[in-house]
Amino acid sequence: MKRRPIQLILVLILASVIGLGLALYANQSLHIKNPPSVSTSSQSAPKATSTTITFVGDMMLDRYIRAQAEIHGYDHILAEVKDQLLAVDMVVGNLEGPITSQSSVSTYDPQDPNHYRFTFAPLVADLLTEHNIGLVSIGNNHIENFGRGGVDETTKFLDIAGISYVGHPYNDENLSFVKQINGQQFSFVSFNYADDRPASKTQQQIEALKDRNDAPDWIIVLAHWGREYEQSASPAQVETARSFVDTGADLVIGTHPHVIQNRETYRDVLIYYSLGNFVFDQYFSPAVRCGLMLSVRFDSTSSIETTENFVELIEDGSTQPADCRNAATEKEQ
Image 1 (spheres, rainbow, N blue to C red):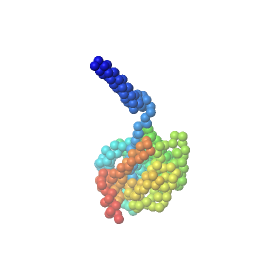
Image 2: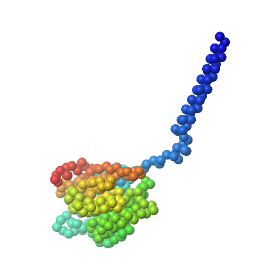
Image 3: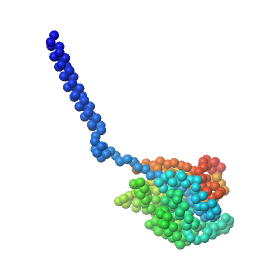
Image 4: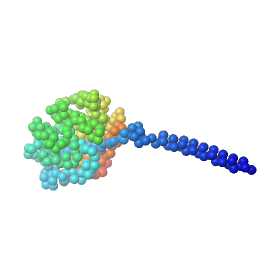
């Protein structure tokens, strides 16, 4: 009868020992799964960062647009899309003409040669800055409308405003520009059908960028090319764009046709052949009035996401958000 208490005590002691052992094992496992904070931060991968850049099409701020800006103020032109432009890290567009201190000579008569000769007021540089347009392509067929002096004034006004540029018609060094945003290196490279430099010159720029010790994370080609008012890219555009991708471009963005053209994916690289108009006094068809604002999110893990928003050119000289793409395509077919 007296042995039972002793046996009970032994059972209790044994249970305690086993329980302590299990507790120590559980604590050890928890420690392995949750190492000290210093160890965790040193072993974990860095957080991915991203940069969003919005690309817009042709910007022409002379002729009727200039007249409307002088009536309503330059802010009027982009007031309706300002919030969208300010919501991203940077906006890139095609500056379809020089910024100079010269008076405008353009007229509204298509038969007058000056109808196609542009110069933009110095206030345009401020307009671009205030709307987050941090880089422009000056590699186009209108940048030399006021000669070499006009190009020199353009780069001067852009420099003062803190706006970067690519596509200088007289300087190969300014065919490309490298910019760091959010810890990522972006290189923008120009191709302009209207100057004497062939596509191979742009390919050489891409190759040189890839060979740098500090090679950029992203190489983006800004191409001015194609047939005006054609909604499908020409065979020459397709061949040229694919040659840029074969050389190492990560994205190709086109302008000049004044209408939105098709896009394609070639070797996992997006090619947008034409974004259409962004600021222009062309109202003669739904297609020329509709432009694409393309926002591209570049992730540090080397992936991209795109968002397409559309804008419409209004006859008061302004650019406004609009769901115009389908209507423009249907009416042009």
